[in-house]
Length: 114
Length: 112
Image (cartoon, rainbow over all chains, first blue to last red; front, side):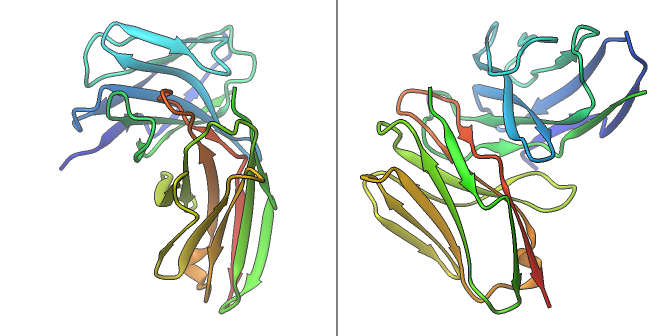
């Protein structure tokens, strides 16, 4: 069953701690994305990767880091430098080079900083 | 870069009424305009899209129209049902770019 899997679904973190959100896809898509969703703010792009071992900053990359060591995996680390990390995080993928066509989303991870 | 404005931010209708959500984009070169629906607690899913060489596209109760001159596009839902209640996002894509620019979303509430 093809798709995108995000884990964990819910995560709690203390201030000052880094946390890593997992994103795995078996759609054979080259491009992968991380979005942050806050109420009334829409979907804001954090980082994206179009090919293994390469990634680019999106609109709100500060305080986040990513890696793309495998085509299937694009983990996102929320660092202690992120001032307001409590949010809903969505991972997505798309075929390489596609500037049209569907963006496939995972179920999301909800991060709460205590 | 591209900028997408979406209105209204919330929309309440009675079951059976029509609903219209409007978006404007800033870069006339954008050529792909999808609409995503996100039900409460779920992932966004594509419901309809339109390319710049087409003025209108329909899929059952859903239609999208595009006005390239005015740089705006709209989602039309007819005969609304309670299960249409969700947040709807419009987006625009520039050719050659793999990233979508999203609007801020419209929360649609359909009352029985």
